[in-house]
Length: 312
Image (tube, rainbow, N blue to C red; front, side):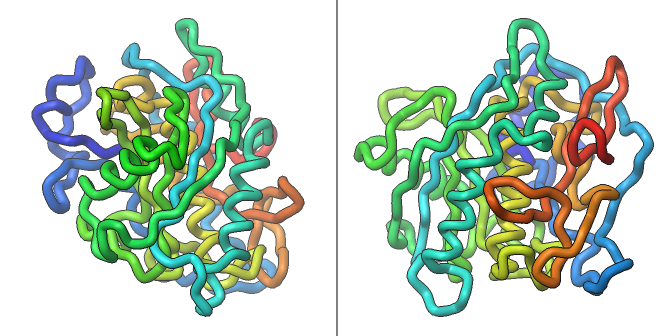
């Protein structure tokens, strides 16, 4: 999902798609949301897999000349209270996310991004994990879009996190925190870019703990790692990470509607699903099972939603 600072800037982009039917305004900025789950609250039992999605090719994407991040580095800002007794916003939940961040690079799933390499940008399919920091409600528990950038700016300017031009900075909020422009009602996460202190160019993302709204931002009420809110957030984090790599400044890979690669496959989980810990999963890495939304693979001029290069 992409987020724009102003509609005027979006129109000024040197691309040919029409924004009027794609961009929705919630609050004071325009965005293409990673929308809430239209197939939520699916029943859970063997033989009733979650939404698989089509095996047919999708509509084409085009490369508009913008930069890409060949090997992104993940940074995490834990916003809010991650020491709660609700079974989700806790150290165990943080460990699940760190295990994801440390191991998604080089997986058959993330390597799908390599298929969008073009014009001198060699997407490696690898990811680095650069570390994390905390922010205990510096902007309260009802955040605006501009608050998210300020939180990132503060973490970097205070040297709690290093500045990295190839970094993607994730503000992950505990479930008692709302993002007031539409979290849980219109989207589950987003990514964008901006300028912070010192004029430094930064790519960043908001993703909330889906425990706040499992019916909107999760595909199932159980989960492979016994934390439905965090497992669902990992699917959104993966979605935003791959988009931030292939379209970090919202002017690289897009389709005619303004959708990025993961947008085209959102809330579909493919045909390789299996049961794990009483829940559905579709891939394993980092010593864990995961249920993660599919991503685009480009094959010549064709585009397909895939779990990995051999499974759709």
